Length: 326
Image 1 (cartoon, rainbow, N blue to C red):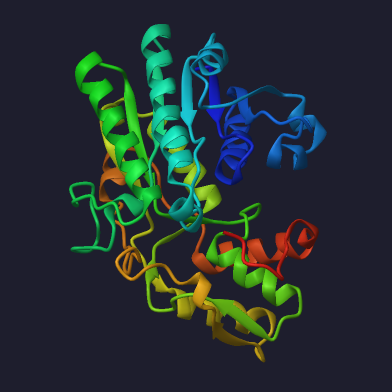
Image 2 (image 1 turned 90 degrees about the horizontal axis):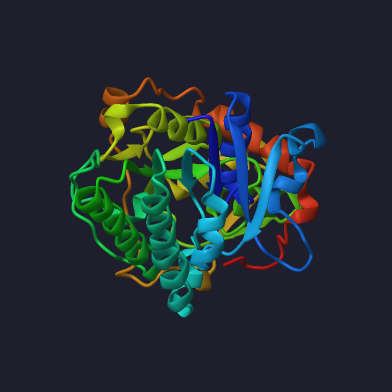
């Protein structure tokens, strides 16, 4: 592949992946969600010399015509465009079906018609639900514990069907919890950091006992590229995981210790998921990605947290630490 399209390039992981692809020498077309302000999300924060190298296409992943036009002339597509916030999926599930399932179908149909060389469909560790065994490998059962995770399961299975039915050369990429610079406050790590940097003494959080397997975003981006560059990964669904876990409570205490040791954690009831919807444990296996690619984790959790705090210190203007961001 020489020229690739990144859908969701204006988002958190997508913007980092776009940068990483440029650094690896790819020509990149960035699919950004159309809006009348002509803003390109996190792409707008990149240095101008990097922006000059990117071909930006504005559109809507729910529109099959726009998706097909965006995919004209590219060798591969990294499909990251999605609605991902779990709390928002509780009251707006229709939009998740339209974006996550129908949007993925649009990419798959266009790739089949255009004979695209490689397609990477982005999944999520949330498709597994609470771990039935650990580490969670790619054979673990799926469980839709939120409308969000249900739509991602649907998108994954659609992708599998296009590989099995039409021979579409694709891989399903399943990152576990990713964090780093540019992540919105709907995720737990920037929620904690933004409240602390805003000077709050009481840090409002939901459940503290669930555990997660956290990838630093640059390692996640490297995982996408390693999978795309491996012919052995075609037809496979592959975790990107560190195979390490930490509870939300332990995570919060570690960040508090780095920023303001006097701060305390307070439970905010509106941040609690419904009991049967909460995913209590995620600990991923990375055996498969290591077997099929040359990927390996480059950043420790502590390094990633340090870089995230440093970035957020100089970008607090984009966070509303006083409200709950769903």
